[in-house]
Image (cartoon, rainbow, N blue to C red; front, side, top):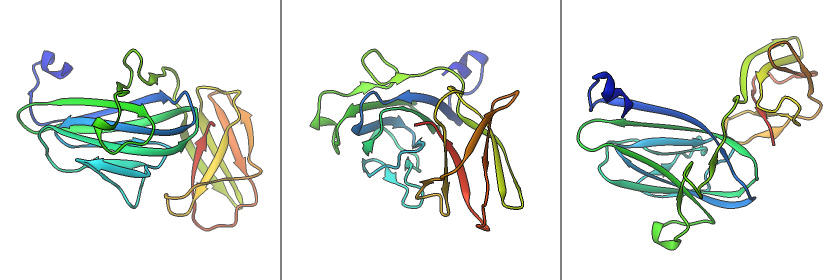
Length: 208
């Protein structure tokens, strides 16, 4: 771990990682995680259909698969069904208590519950594996409401892309909001929704 070169402890630390991963073809994909200790992995915008091995699917927030307790050598796999071919943001959190520490995230095209079901696994970011894309993140900087109008200011890796605003009442199911307008600002982009009457909703920006 890089922190060890700074003289920090080899135990009792937390690892938080963000990346942008490109899915080259639409269809089913399986994401595998090999860790010591536990972990949580979020594939933003793509809920896991099922999880097998040493982890579980979060029933309330199915974009997460997680092994919430300390483990030793542990493997888990999460199936993403009917995934669109585009770039996704992922978040990975793990930690080290004592002993060994390792973290591998791998993937294969198709739906699998066991590692032995295919020989096509590749580490994400490795040669032949899913590509890690560099560049600006798609990130909401602020959201404001005035009467029945909602404004979202955000940055995007593709300012000229066909962005969408999605809404949810429970953070589980998301629907595209019709009628959103977009314009460039000095620091990024601004989306405006008019005629909003719901008292509570969650919003996010998507770039298909």
